[in-house]
Length: 94
Image (tube, one colour):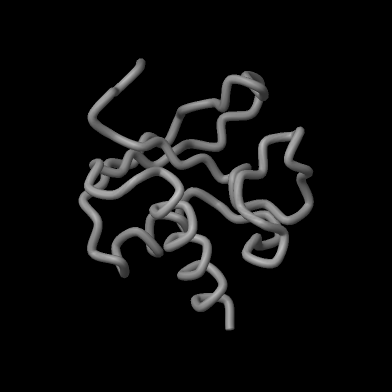
């Protein structure tokens, strides 16, 4: 299921316990310990981004682990979306 009009956000992108090689995409300082797809969805909603939740999706590197993902409609670059969502996840955990 490839969508070219959306950015896919996986929980592993924001997991501080993962290395860059294991899939983390944000700096460790912006990462959170074991984020869930629900947390990511709340952060996306708080940012006012149009999104779709895919609850039974599995990251390609971890096909046995159905963590789910959030599809965010493109409007900004993937890097900008990742940074904004990571900052919002940290703000929510305080």
